[in-house]
Amino acid sequence: MNLEDTHAQVGALLRQNGQRYTSRRVQLVEILVAADGPVTIQQILDLDKSLAQSSAYRNLLVLEESHVVARVVTGTEFAGYELSETFTGHHHHLICSGCGDVTDFSLSSAEELALERTLQSAANEAQFTVEAHRLDLIGTCRSCT
Amino acid sequence: MNLEDTHAQVGALLRQNGQRYTSRRVQLVEILVAADGPVTIQQILDLDKSLAQSSAYRNLLVLEESHVVARVVTGTEFAGYELSETFTGHHHHLICSGCGDVTDFSLSSAEELALERTLQSAANEAQFTVEAHRLDLIGTCRSCT
DNA sequence: CCAGTAATGAGAACCACTCTCAGTACCGCA
DNA sequence: TGCGGTACTGAGAGTGGTTCTCATTACTGG
Image (cartoon, rainbow over all chains, first blue to last red; front, side):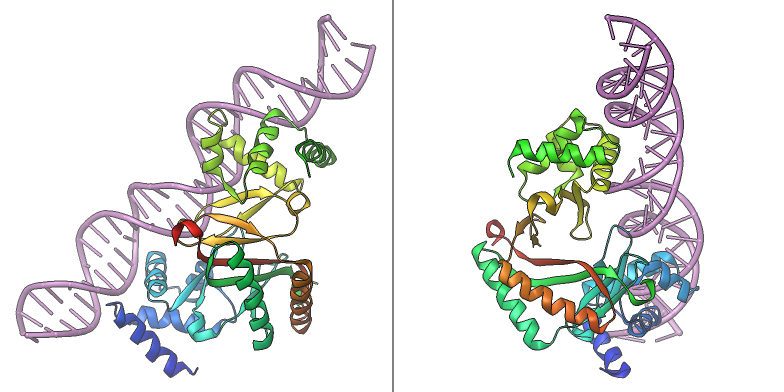
C-alpha cells in the first residue's frame, strides 16, 4: 500500500471512531510506516522531539482503538507499536535477545495455511475459539552474531 | 514428572547456581506445579498470604535465573510465571481475550517438527539464529463463549 | 465568525516492579 | 553443640514506564 492510500485509510478508520486525523497523528503514522518492525515510545520521542510524551501515548491509544496500530509486547521490556496487519499484512517477529531489536518476517501463504489448520484443530480440542495467533522467533540477529 | 522428582531437580538447579531451596521457594514451586498455565504475582500473593511481595518477586527472579521458572508476558497486563519447559515440556498458550486467562496446549511432535522446519528456513533467509519460538493463540475460552 | 467540542502539552499521579536494610535462618566447621 | 559467616526474608521506600488531569489551543459544523 502506498503512502497516500495509507493516510486515506487511516483517516477513514479514525473517522469511523469519531476521531480526527490530526497532524500529530499523521506524524506518528509516518514514523511507523518508515519502520520495518515495532517502534518503542522512546524511539518515537527521539525521532520527533516536539511531541509530548503524553500525546504520544494518548494518540497511540486512539490509533490502537481505531485498529490503525497494534501494540506489541516482545519481552519484559517496553511496549512497541506498529501499523496493524491491515496495512502491513500478516507477519511475525524476529526478536533478538542480544540487542532487543525486533524485525518482521512472513511465512508463505501455504505455510501459513498449514499452521492455521494445525492450530485450529488444537484449539478445537480445548474448545477455544481462535481469533488470532502470535508467532515470534527468539534468537540472535545478523549484527549480533 | 512427579512432585518428588520435581523438587529434587529444582533443588539441584538452584544449588548449581549457589542458591538454597528454602521453604519459601518450595511453596512457590508447589503453587506453579498446581497451575495449568502461567500464574501472576497477584494470584501467588493471594494464595499465600504470608509471603511478602518483595520476596515473591525476588524468589521468582532467582528461580528464573536458575531456569526453574519462566516469565511469561502475555499481553499489556502483568507478567506471569510458570515452570520452565524442563518440567512442563514444550508447549504454547491459549490466551482468552475475554477473561485474560492463559492455559497451556501442545502440538503433536510431528506438527511441532514441521513448524520448526518452516521457521528455520524463514530464519535462514533473514540470517537470524533461532534459539526458541513462541506461539500463542488469542481468542475466547470455553467459559467466556 | 462563533460557539462547542476535540486535541495538545506539561506535569502530577499511578502502579507494577525493584532496591535497601535491619533482622532472621541456615550451613560449614571445629 | 556452639559459633561465625553468609544467604534469605519482610517491610517499606524508590524507580520508571504509563496514564490521568487540566488549562490552553485548534478544529468543525452551523
